[in-house]
Amino acid sequence: MASLPLLVCFILCTYNSLAHGGNEEEHVLVAVPTSRYSEPAATCSTSRVRWLDEGSNTVSVPLVHRHGPCAPSTRSSDEPSLSERLRRSRARSKYIMSRASKSNVSIPTHLGGSVDSLEYVVTVGLGTPAVSQVLLIDTGSDLSWVQCAPCNSTTCYPQKDPLFDPSRSSTYAPIPCNTDACRDLTRDGYGSDCTSGSGGGAQCGYAITYGDGSQTTGVYSNETLTMAPGVTVKDFHFGCGHDQDGPNDKYDGLLGLGGAPESLVVQTSSVYGGAFSYCLPAANDQAGFLALGAPVNDASGFVFTPMVREQQTFYVVNMTGITVGGEPIDVPPSAFSGGMIIDSGTVVTELQHTAYAALQAAFRKAMAAYPLLPNGELDTCYNFTGHSNVTVPRVALTFSGGATVDLDVPDGILLDNCLAFQEAGPDNQPGILGNVNQRTLEVLYDVGHGRVGFGADAC
Ligand SMILES: *[C@@H]1O[C@H](CO)[C@@H](O)[C@H](O)[C@H]1NC(C)=O
Ligand SMILES: *[C@@H]1O[C@H](CO)[C@@H](O)[C@H](O)[C@H]1NC(C)=O
Ligand SMILES: *[C@@H]1O[C@H](CO)[C@@H](O)[C@H](O)[C@H]1NC(C)=O
Ligand SMILES: *[C@@H]1O[C@H](CO)[C@@H](O)[C@H](O)[C@H]1NC(C)=O
Ligand SMILES: *[C@@H]1O[C@H](CO)[C@@H](O)[C@H](O)[C@H]1NC(C)=O
Ligand SMILES: *[C@@H]1O[C@H](CO)[C@@H](O)[C@H](O)[C@H]1NC(C)=O
Image (cartoon, rainbow, N blue to C red; front, side, top):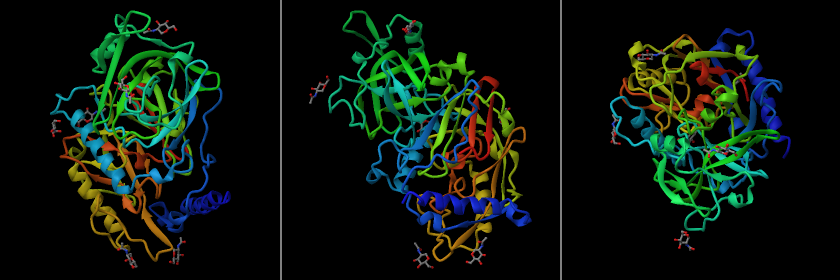
């Protein structure tokens, strides 16, 4: 069994090198063996991860999909169906788009996107001595939280690890109400009532309600976070959750990576320059990474585009074009005027109406050899039965300033034999760059320099 992923990788790598061979056509069309989809993922592989330089001012931790053999808690029976994943993702993206939409400023900020659609987790240490916590990463919300003891079965959902118990940590402290940190929390919409703590003095409460109906409330707290052995974040501010509900499952909490002051990224900006990156792996049986800090010596592997900051939490860039099989789709620049939010938690990219229609037509034309399946959650899905390999066109996204990003073939383009894009709203509304398109890329959110970078083949 152990050799299975190696075999899959061997086939993949062989095709990758074929694709980069001399044949002109292979620069725009790539043959992908369909057999790789039927190989069951059995073990977790970290072999593709390109780890960061030891010497640079960055710290990286493995990042894995919450389902599949890399997950810290493997319960494959819990894996939701594709249509369920897409339903959750759509709920999240609808919420994010309405909040980011220029015509809609009325949604309270204590609401976050759907937590339930989040799919990637990291393991960090919390407290002293550090205890492992498996956290969902979320670029669409800011405040991190974990479930905290004491909490009974009606107020906390079941999780794999023991609850974080602040009374066993020598570095834990609730944040008092009369602090700047608590006032900032209230200003940014995550605040809640002050409660009187056991040691006297009013404790700063927090509350978050997510778009999918799940919620968490508790005490805004101060603690030591261990990212990697010997690499700690002192005075990490997070929510110690004493009341959670909703469709969460098995994970200990959430790591907020948005752009507001409550986010881990902003809290650590004096050390890591307000930069972070991640690589989402091609498949659930491979690991990627989450890193704080920008690669100091090696920004050369990246293409950059300016970051547009209109809304505190979300990271927005301007897309300017798409090519399919080397040919640009024919749309005016105004088709992308709404901007694109880059999100770790939305699965399928949501593209504005005009751009989506043109992309769909070009992709279907390039894939005309394969029968289309009837519309389901997605409208461009293929039946590859009977084909030992499938020829997929390269798809590249171009961003403001000329940055061109080749999506991974096929894992950045296809999700379960479907084109991993769908139509969002009108052209002047924001779109969302989802996590399938981001697979195998290192996506660098360099907030300090006001730019987003994309590096190829990072995991
Ligand atoms: C604005 O927000 C409301 C309430 O959440 C929502 O129903 C509506 O669809 C949003 N409008 C746009 C254009 O996003
Ligand atoms: C759980 O804790 C809550 C709040 O402390 C309390 O109201 C509730 O009665 C408890 N439920 C059980 C089953 O112990
Ligand atoms: C967090 O704890 C540190 C000491 O451990 C202290 O210096 C800092 O003021 C605390 N922050 C808040 C907001 O309570
Ligand atoms: C992004 O696009 C919007 C709308 O077209 C434009 O106003 C803005 O200046 C652009 N920003 C960047 C950094 O390209
Ligand atoms: C896919 O194609 C095969 C062979 O052409 C056919 O037998 C099968 O019913 C098709 N599956 C679907 C879901 O249409
Ligand atoms: C794809 O499969 C066909 C047979 O179905 C074969 O003739 C062709 O050589 C294969 N292409 C590649 C690149 O493997």
